[in-house]
Amino acid sequence: MSDYQPRLDDIRFTLNHVAGLEDVSKLNGYQHADPATVATILEEAGRFFAEVIAPLNRIGDLQGSVLTDDGNVRTPDGFKDAYAKYVESGWASAHMPQDWGGGGLPYMVGVVIQELFKTANMAFALAPTLTHGAVEALQRHGSDRLKDDYIEKLVSGEWTGTMNLTEPEAGSDVGALRTKAIKQDDGSYRLFGTKIFITWGDQDLTENILHLVLARTPDAPPGTKGISMFLVPKFILDETGAPGERNDLKVVSLEHKLGIHASPTCVISFGDNGEGAVGFLVGDEQHGMRNMFTMMNAARVGVGMEGVAIGERAYQHAVQYARDRVQGRQIGADARESVSIIEHPDVRRMLLTMRAYVEAMRSLLYVTAGEGDHMMHAESEERRRLASERLALLTPIVKAWCTDIGVELASIGVQVHGGMGYIEETGAAQYLRDSRIAPIYEGTNGIQAVDLVLRKLPLENGAVVTALISEMSATVDSMGEHEELATFRDELAHAIEGLAETSTWLGARLAEGDIASALAGASPYLRQFGTVLGGWLMANAAVEALRAPAGFDPEFLEQKVNTAAFYGEQILPIANGLIAAVRGGSGRLESATF
Ligand SMILES: Cc1cc2nc3c(=O)[nH]c(=O)nc-3n(C[C@H](O)[C@H](O)[C@H](O)COP(=O)(O)OP(=O)(O)OC[C@H]3O[C@@H](n4cnc5c(N)ncnc54)[C@H](O)[C@@H]3O)c2cc1C
Image 1 (cartoon, rainbow, N blue to C red):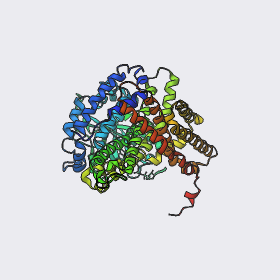
Image 2 (image 1 turned 30 degrees about the horizontal axis):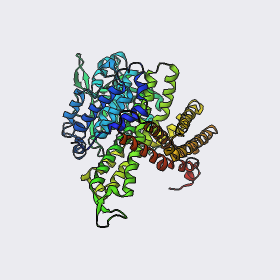
Image 3 (image 1 turned 60 degrees about the horizontal axis):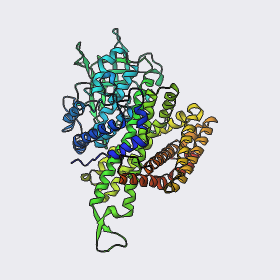
Image 4 (image 1 turned 30 degrees about the vertical axis):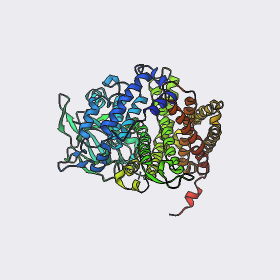
């Protein structure tokens, strides 16, 4: 039996009673995804990822992907076979567009399938994460020819996609990139340059790999305005559409990393032979940055999911260990009898903290995905617009809050194991090592905080944030009838007031042009926002659980209320503790000498 057991009851409850799957399934094109059908699909998915993918997590960590002498990447034992099963069984394409051979499930359900994959094996799951982004970018911005040639194979999972932005001198500042793209008479381009840190930049799982590469045409203006996006296949297609001649690109080396060892992180050189790598323009010239954002926004939600996934896996591991490990005696009990550490209040606090955060983050993840579904499929233009704004606001919070918390939960997981947590054999340390990348890539969490304050808070003159805060306040009212939630209700009301206060304060700094003060408070503001959103959604979950919906075990519902109340009473109060840091201004930071 796998050591990973998907918590399908919590997933099903969150989908149906927090994130509104039923409403999503009524949207045009999603009628086949009613909650009962989705539950059956997820049972199957859970079995697949637990049995086929999860057992490879440790092997992946120990062996890692390696670069062979012939310049190709070899993945760890068992990955190739498991990936083939993933494609054959249809999990790769379940939520991909039906027009291109996918199953057409809602994005919200696709997010759950990816979450299951990531919880089973984060490093492995990164390959399809970027493939999904590539499908979206091609669908929205690719020419008909590119769509016809490439999308179906990406959707099925037969080929994978990658995202190539980063260069040695262009990390957070993507606009500094130097890779060149030179137009040819036949309309194609030849690319020259070096990209670093390319996730799954090469592998032996699929026949072809499609790199989406940001580069600059010779006469392009400097900065992000001059960037264009190109599709650069590893193997150029022959006249039958099959992978033919090898393109002029090669993996120069693989990075040696703290974690996600199974995920090959490649330095790729384009145009080393002097011919240039053949590439095809995606969208218009100099629109590359905007088009890459299609990929990046989806990928940011996908990375936020890694916080949920690693937190869940670390939690399950820690609970198992805490049950088995006998150490110490219970205060007040027969002094001769040792107990499992799960009996100690401090260990119970660690475990419940992990569970509460995971469930809060899961709620935020699914709610955000639901906005993506409404943005694409809602009937009224107004609803689509509102969903698009809400999604824009929530994306940096999902990315940064969930991944910061994911690292903290993986660290608590190590702590539950005591000294054995620091020893690699138990596996707890792998989760901590794997989790640490998520706050860094896909735009560091610092960059997400800047995005939240400079671009998302001012959306519609602050109305997008204000509308969300009003919606949260309505939850406070709905908690009124439940005595058990009285403390939680007071804490939530207080935390929402705190969030309104810092939002107004930051808005005022932006209005008066004191950007330095606004940015100095950006990261604590994002943390505060995430913590309050978690409280709001856990409050909704508690109210729903107290209504005792059919189809859930009473014990599960009781635990849901207890976990939510723990979040509300003991985690949520942290949010207002951040107000001083948000409003602290930039003075202390500027005065510091380093
Ligand atoms: C394992 C791994 C996989 C990756 N996968 C990919 C991939 O598939 N494709 C790809 O293109 N890239 C990938 N990356 C690159 C990744 O996205 C970058 O590392 C990341 O964007 C940060 O860039 P940087 O490393 O240059 O750090 P820097 O930009 O040098 O940042 C260093 C620090 O300064 C802060 N900082 C920088 N600028 C600002 C600013 N304006 N405001 C506030 N703070 C700032 C950052 O938050 C960070 O804390 C990967 C990286 C790793 C390690």
